[in-house]
Amino acid sequence: MAKSKSALDKDLMFSKIMPSIALSKEAKQEEELSAFPEEDGGLRSRIFTTMDGLRARSSVATVNIMEQMVLENMDAVIGKFNGCRCDRCRCDMAALALNRLPAHYIVVSPEEMQARMEEVPKKQVLDALVQAVIKVRSNPRH
Picture 1 (tube, helix red, strand yellow):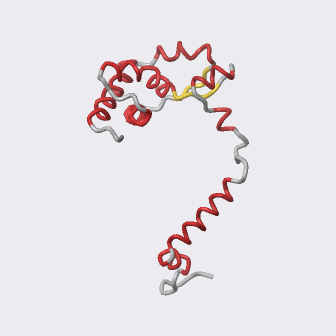
Picture 2 (cartoon, helix red, strand yellow):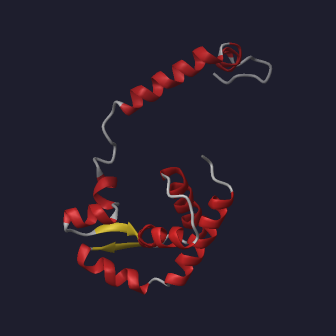
Picture 3 (cartoon, one colour):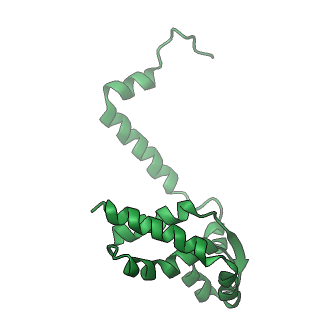
């Protein structure tokens, strides 16, 4: 049965009047949904991985090569530009740099990874990292 424009949405009104109770209902619904096993059967964890996960598995996986390049070069750039090394600042720097770079996913085995990383223009990654380090250094969030 369709509601008319003049009909009140009782759930909306209840959430406006009693927001804490409405939030707890939403939290319960989310908790119920998370109780179910992964719908993809763990496919995400089998396909996408980090460099460490790739080495441990010794099989092929989908990897964002830009992410690996940023993580591999981050310490050198932080050192050169005297950036903060706390976890919060490092995460901010990585996020800023990765948002400036195009995602570049490849399917590789551990043996192929280093050769494929050498194909990526390192200047582009370093430029994004330098800009991120300078921005976070000038306005840290800690």
